[in-house]
Amino acid sequence: MLDDYDPRITAARPDLAAKYLEGKVTAARFVEGTVREVRDAQTSVRGQPSPDAALTTEALRGDQVTVYEETEEGWCWGQLLSDGYVGWLSANALSTPGAAPTHKVAALRTLVFPAPSIKHPPLEGLPLGSRLAVLGQEKDFAVLANGYLPARHLVPLDAAEPDFVAVAERFVGVPYLWGGKTSLGIDCSGLVQVALTAAGIGCPRDSDMQEATLGESVTPAPHFTNVQRGDLMFWKGHVAIAVNSHRIIHANAFHMAVVIEPLAEAVARIRAAGLEVRSVRRVAI
Image (cartoon, rainbow, N blue to C red; front, side):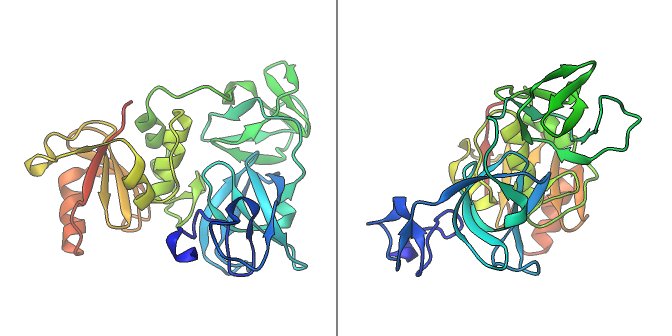
């Protein structure tokens, strides 16, 4: 029965599965799980309980994870509540959920200070999309349980960016990182997910999931002249965002960075590697 489910978003193994899947999958035992919260600025989600295992995605400060197993070696196997992704996280990066988040980080990255002053050495940096419980405000700083950060870098939890393409454009120059979701490193589908999430649009993690669920199909004209800003262009294993009818933005391994480049050049280069544009999906902006 496990073959009928996507293992990336199904909390089930032959030996263990989430209780909500009982009767749907076969496993030796089923558990309810315990909700934990990411306390690190960001933490890796891996395919196996090892620091050398492949990075599949990242979880950010304030993300919640339902943990179904914790090993003696300090690894937790669980499922992210935000997008349903399943994997292994370091137990040290998780904690019991605290106060409910009220705000999220709207800057590409912000700094947390030990006092309401920029002259103090920062304690940590938090990426775009981090979810935080703000206790108050002192001067121009939001007060957190563990420090202070510039209030202008925060927006209410339900705030939505008006243009998700503009969010993606802020990542230009960020290094390409398979599985990454922050300004320290990001991949193609991570860029789409982070940008759409900032705009209040739910988005799955991987490009094939995004192609299957986002927006409406657009029949491309010759040379893609009917592509509009915000259209998502999909190749096998890759996704890019149209900036306009002739330029795209994407995180890619050719440049090893997030770049804006001519659409025609990208299509020709990827075609030379053996891949054609598979679909175009239009997401309202």
